Image 1: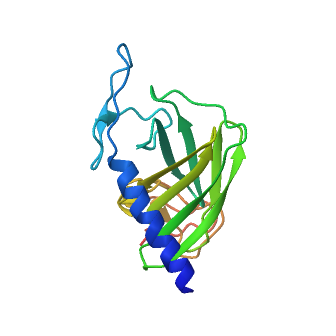
Image 2: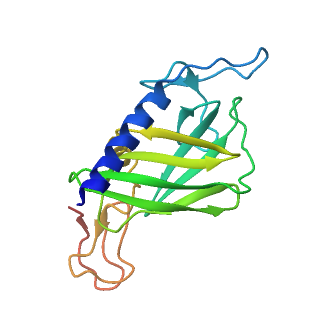
Length: 184
C-alpha cells in the first residue's frame, strides 16, 4: 500500500470519527428517535433496517446485503433525500485487516457498493458529496451483525448430495432413500 493511500485512509478515519460524534439539534416537532448507537449524541430510527449515523446536518443509513453495501441519504428528520448529483465512496476495513475503497453508484433511492468477494466487512467509512456538502460517517462492528443475521437454510441433506434432498427436518432422501444427515 502506498504511503499516500495510508495517509488518505487515516484522514478519512479521523474525519469520520469526528463527524459521527458531531452534535446537532433537531427542530421542534421532529420525529422521536428510537435506537441510540455508540458514538452518537442521540438515537436513530432505521427506515431500511440498517445502521444510521449522523453526517453533519444529515444522516446516512448503511444496510448490508450479500455482496453489497447499500447507503441511504436521510435528512435531519431521517426522511429519504433525493440523490441528484450525489457521488461517493465507501472504505471497507475487513476482519483480515485489509482496506479497499469502492465507488458508490446510484440505484433508485439509494447508493450501492459491490463488496469484493470473500471478505467480511468489519468497518465501513462512507464519504459522500451531496448537495454541495461533503458528508462522512463511520459504521463499526459490522462483522458482528453479519454473524447474527445468517439466513437459516435447510439443516439436513442427503449424504450423497442428491439434488432436491435439502430439508429443514430429518427424514429420507426423496431420490435415493438414504437417511438425511445434519449439515455441518
